[in-house]
Structures are given as C-alpha cells and as structure tokens.
Image (tube, rainbow, N blue to C red; front, side, top):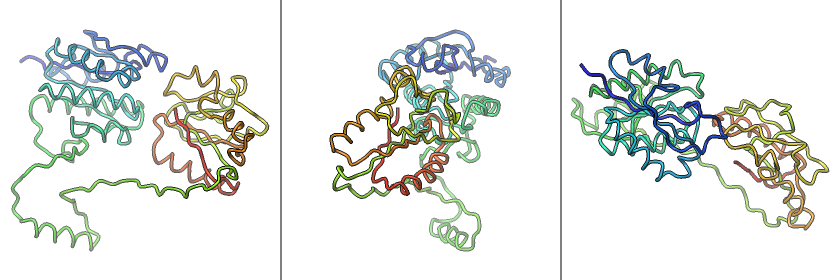
Length: 348
C-alpha cells in the first residue's frame, strides 16, 4: 500500500532560515523533511510521508499574499499531495494567518488540508470555516504534544475516516451546520436543555452563539489643550538592556518607565524587546514606537495640556488576551490616580 503523500508548510523560523530579520523570505520548496516535519514524520509511521516542504517568511506572505499564494499553489501542484499540513503556528499571529490562508487556497483546489494553532491566534477566527484547525499550546514548548495529535488527525483525514464532531475528533468547531436526524424533536430538546441549565446540570447547545468582547468607548475630550496624555505600547520599548526582562514573546510582565525631562528616546537610552518585528528602526529611534518627541512638541505648542512622564510597555507578540487584560487592570489604576485624561496606545 502506498504512503499518503504530504506537503508541509512552515515559516522562515521553523525552516531554519532565520528569525525576524528573514521574515521577508520568499517561498522556497525543498524535497526534504524540515523542522517540525521531523516530529510529524516520527508519528506518521509507515502510513504517510512528507514529499515536500514549503518555507515562506511571515512578513513576505502577509505583505504579498496574492503573489505568495500563486507561487505556493504551483509548488503544491507539482508534488501532487494527498494532504497538505501547515504549521503548527501556536500563537504566532502572522504565521497563523499564513497557515490559514494557504490551507484555504489549497482546500479550494480539492486537496485536504489541516493546520494547528493556539485558541487566541487570529488565524483561527479568520479561517476556521475553510480548513480543519487543531488546538495547540501558546508556544512551541507544546510541540511534543501538538505534533503527535496533528499527525494522527492528518492520517485520519487523508483516509476519509472523519466521522465525528469537533468535540470527538479534537478540532476547533468550524461553525458549519449540517442537517441530521435525531430521535427527539426540537421543542423537546430545547425544554430539556433549559431544565438542565436551570438546575445547574451539564448541557450542550446545538447552536453556539458567538461571544464578542465589547469595549465601551471613553468620553470625548472636549479640550485637548487642557488634557493630560499618557502613552501605552505593545511595541516592547524598554530602557537599554531591558532591566525588567520583558519577554520578547508571550509576555508575562510589563514595564513602567519614567522619561521626565526627556524630549525624545535616543538609541543610547532605549531599545525594543519585541521579537515579532525587525528591531533595527525601533532601536535606532524608539520615538518611532513611543512618540515622545512629537508629543513634547505638541505639549510645547499647547495642542495638549501635558504629557504624563511615565509610559507603560510590553510586547504584544504572542501575549495572551488574559495577560493583556491583567496588565491593563493594574496600570490603568496608576493612570487614573495620576489624573490622565487620555491614552495613546501604540503597536508595531
């Protein structure tokens, strides 16, 4: 019996090309097993084999999506796979978006696809209807668990043995509804669910509603010339040598930095700890991320009342929503106590 032919997609980091400095790497195909493909191969046994690995930089793909997809599709077609696997992407946002987009395009060509990522990866909400997506941990530290699950699922998918639901098969719900015949009619099932809910018993809805994190807008500032403005950033700007050791990815902390008397952030005093973008320009002039120089000028010109002398910084790269909310709940109390009227939130 012939093995299932698999084409595997990974980014520049897992392809061993480099880090963020190589994120503009154009698509390349190799007829060998690379990076996470080794772990997948170990779990395929004799049932499947990776016949080609496609490597593409995260920035290149997301900045040149149409061109990248066209090139990648040609590479995939040349190797005639039975199955296409992307990732795992864990909580790397651009990587997750690339994995989802590639799987969608290839799935539309009639080739089965699957990827895997963390539940907070933006690629999940964007592409869960277009491909199977398996859950992973927040970072590559969970690769030992992710790879066997992905390999097992992939083989089952390729063989056409997918018969269960998202819960039983282990993938994220795709929001796709199918008509099925059941013994009880809808009214009976609805009443039973309601009774279970009222009595605190376990029940499973047949149509899960989406949840949205609505943020109430703040009150408008009527007169900026009297307002005290603060800066908060997820761009990772920190004093030289990162004294608080804010992580480059999946941050567990943030820093608060006093810049009293400073009119700009120089390369001698500040840098970025962020691991999700090319740091060269931010290290050269951190005002590009935390615009102290411009805000000082606006303060001098009377456009704003004053600039709060402390900015708060963390890295948004892979940082969970839960941690982000926890950070904000802490430093917003400091901002309120300092009489700050508005916050400028900068990213990367």
